[in-house]
Length: 65
Image (cartoon, rainbow, N blue to C red):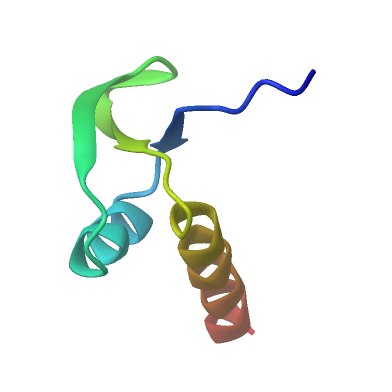
């Protein structure tokens, strides 16, 4: 039996803002456990969130070259 994650945590503000612009809803924000001065965004998983986040990461890596 495979358990599906209901939420996805995003630590990078650039990706979180882009996901919001794409229409994904933030479930909540919280302090980053590795650096309490920073936020992390928690999104509810849906059919397109993982795909959109993967695309944003790929585009980001392409732009860093």
